[in-house]
Length: 78
Image 1 (cartoon, one colour):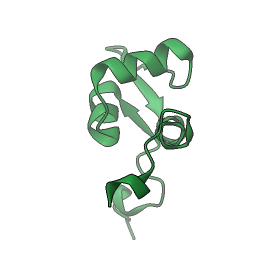
Image 2: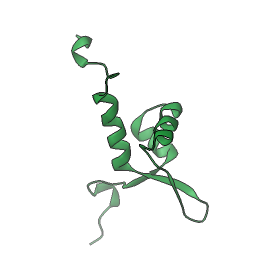
Image 3: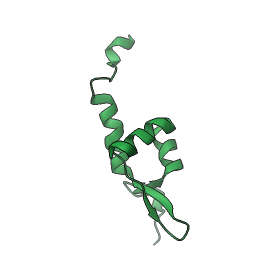
């Protein structure tokens, strides 16, 4: 029995930069900031050197956006 990879929990484990931008919905500038600060690290892999980042690192960087002092409380929305 073959299982569709997309149905596995935690899939995909790593993403290209284009996929990471789509996944997180942050700007290119925000992704660059995360890279500069070492929050998200893209590692070249494969023959063509496509760089990939761990999804858990992307998730942690997004979580930090909502936990930091610059985060906007959703209480102010209503």
